Length: 215
Ligand code: C5P
Image (cartoon, rainbow, N blue to C red; front, side):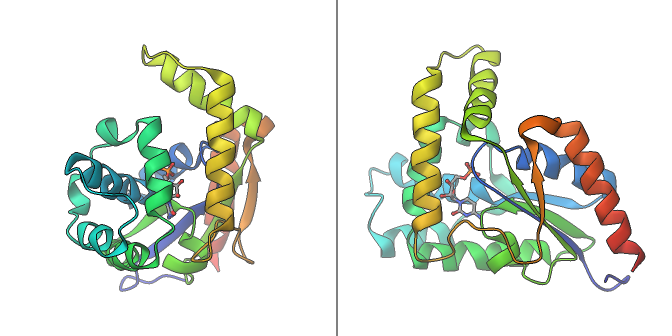
């Protein structure tokens, strides 16, 4: 339920390379909402630590770094590197880091007119009262191939088998951690993009959001 005073929040969760980012950007453009890829906040924290020569596993240092981030300056082109995703998932297991970033993410979600947030714990922890929640998945094979095509499409080189191994390792770390593990919220709509492709996923999501807005 939304009103002129209440921000409209759409939560999109799922494992690495499932298509959440593309879906979220499409939804945000369609409904004229802000968009936050919360993975970038974990990536920016990891990159800041690496750049400053600091360890990735010192919780107090990492939490201070996370708390000092400016969410309006998250550069996707710099942060999207595959290795930064791996470092981000190590930083993301630490509760104090999550507390700092979740607070900033919630603040973002409450800014009018509202936002689409994508990540791992949006529907379960960050925005449990979102108007609507999606959980986007695809098989590891399909997700690895998408990541591979993205890297090679941008002129980079990559090895499909090692990308799949990395994705599976990251999924396991994200799903097995104690604080805010990756899992669908009980009231999330599941969207499996293995076969349907992103355009069909967007259409399915749009119909569900329109229906939720009518109630
Ligand atoms: O989505 P992306 O691949 O950019 O996320 C990088 C890492 O950040 C994930 O593997 C996960 O460990 C962490 N993350 C998280 N919670 C979120 C978003 C990302 O723990 N809401």
